[in-house]
Length: 519
Ligand code: NAP
Image 1 (cartoon, rainbow, N blue to C red):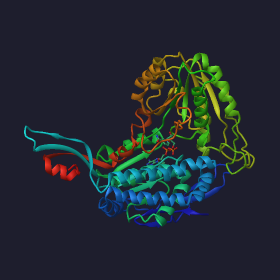
Image 2: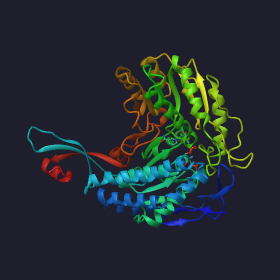
Image 3: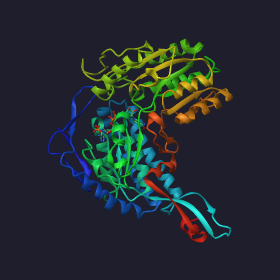
Image 4: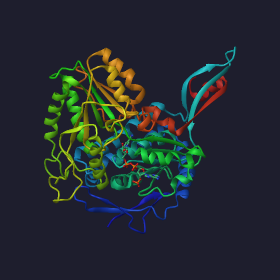
């Protein structure tokens, strides 16, 4: 049985015992085991801080970008192999695996491009210089510099490749070395990707470390200059936030957590129009891509009362065409959920939703997947529910079912009602509004933007070129307030801020201008 190693202190550490099993969720066959027993996390973080930090900080933004470019290319060169690993350990269809792996290489490449625009500098200039006195000499200027610590990245099970790469891109460009820890259950892909990066991307010693398995006492070793970027459930986030590293030592923490993302169909949308087609297509994709295990997937579908029946009918047609099974079998369009626990959580979650909604398509009954051994695999088909009398506090507004499940929720056709219901989700990553009515769209933006990290606007004119709402883009913000964790990632240069210290400089204008390259 393969034992997966961790890459710490510049070398691969292979566990002496089996530890946790990583399985193929279609067959339940064990693929590998991993454990972090025996790793000295204090020494691992010190190595990154003391070796990787100075090496990165000596590089300009452009040079760090060249490193990101090498990382992107190394992943792309092994694309087919990595897709196969994602299919085996993540239950991904090939298309799901591409979303993860190409998302990883694409995000690194996008940050390499951004780095080129930042050029030979090592300091980020924040806003314009300000004249402080009566004379024209005394000026103030905000700048950002790399923090002198280590960035620990803890990721969720659903995006082992992209999760590693999108955090790595921002931290490395900002000048911080990283220690990356994937969720254990699907770590095989992140492990192989790390092997590829270490072997082929010529990363300076200490800049990249990889922890495969439990985090052990790693957080106990975080100090005031360090950063934790966490992605996962709200429950784990709540435990981590209370850790002394953050409460007493003021290490930085960024949280990306649950989200009850919404799609709102405007009252003006014609049943047969392009905006409606876009809505139906987006919902069907968001529900089934990665078997609904995407933090950005729609969970709540707000539809004007008079269109609820037609929306359910059209979604039923789309969902009825979904073929659930082992992603390596012909014709399969949706794989299993990733773990036995996930399957149990989806079943229990749908039961919770049934307190305020009724199932109108599918079920969570046991299912034999196409091409999978009978009785094996964590399969569940898409489930659509209907809620005619939504209220803040009910299950559709408080419980995330992390699988191919969404609820059509009736609203009265006004932006005020739809906004209040979106807000009742307690803060989310993405809300999507489908309408050609500019007044409705404006009112929706004012109503939902304060509760949402990203708002996508679908309309007749944009229908042919719209991007999937669930796709996090390197140049736009990913993260959201409240339930979603309150964190911010990506967003171009904004993604670097977590890893940099903002400082106000006061002094001679000429000195400041020379420092910031403004003259
Ligand atoms: P999870 O159970 O909270 O685990 C997330 C990560 O935290 C894993 O790497 C886990 O490691 C680690 N972890 C757990 N306890 C820890 C501790 N005490 N100290 C340090 N690390 C610890 O979440 P999940 O089941 O993997 O992911 C699903 C959730 O993530 C969903 O709720 C989803 O909405 C959310 N998510 C959010 C985003 C976003 O960007 N907002 C993206 C993806 C997923 P082990 O696996 O080793 O236990």
